[in-house]
Image 1 (cartoon, rainbow, N blue to C red):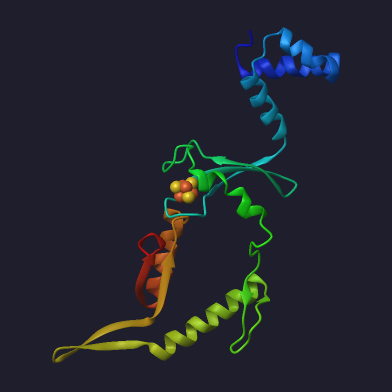
Image 2 (cartoon, protein in one colour):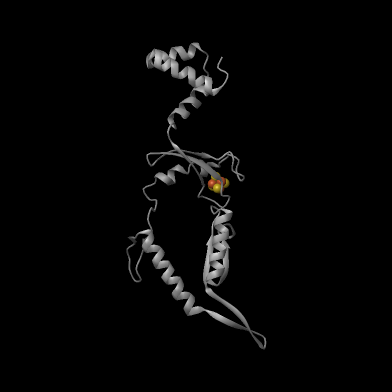
Length: 198
Ligand code: SF4
């Protein structure tokens, strides 16, 4: 019997190298390889040379962790991250099917811009999109800035704008949320929300 995955892979390698594909099936049967081990080894072989990344499911606010394998820019595998504190490797049916969104031809891969009064969306670069957003935020902030606010008989300093709001998401890490809050407060916004509360 094969005791572990490593010895199984060794045997698999030597069988394939020595006997050729035609006879290796017979040899594997002879050495008692069970279907589960064979499937696992085949899956490992499929991912040889692939880079591993962690990511988060983009469907709901649980923010389950995922591990993905990429080779030559192509996504080969996507599965629950066993080390992730939220899901410990498990995924619900939506998360397990997330690969479909990655491969969908409807997936937006660049920012889209529709000019005022326009009817068509046009693709723009990330630099262009960030410039537009920064310019607009500055314009709105300056136009709506409140230095003070009346509280009864007293005028109190508030130094804020109510015209900018920030919306976070379940896929953001603690560190990203910290920076996000900093950016919102520095911009003078007190309206910071989270997708899960909507
Ligand atoms: S795997 Fe399911 S529960 Fe987890 S974030 Fe995705 S949709 Fe939500």
